[in-house]
Image (cartoon, rainbow, N blue to C red; front, top):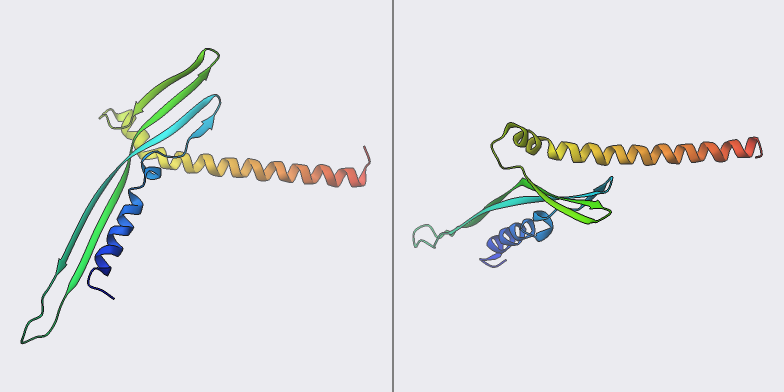
Length: 139
């Protein structure tokens, strides 16, 4: 293992976080609207290396880093008969409503995904029940 391996490994991990997919989120379509989450990514990195000592004969090498992802806005595309309207809703203002939206945005998206999964499972169950009834009582 070369001297630069811990540094390169740390940098590679941080660069994965900095991908464009993490800044502009997956579009969410609902009732004639498309919501596109926008986030801000912050990153820090540090590395250090020791040297050999004639008395101790030791060497040290270390690297570390961190990243944070924060929701900052939603791009809302409203599909209308006349075309599309685009609006940017900032989550960064100090208004209490925007602060609350920022804090619950991830929970709301998780809830929406879970609800969609439940709806899909319920529809599959209904379809199975229909098929079962058709086997018992022909249409």
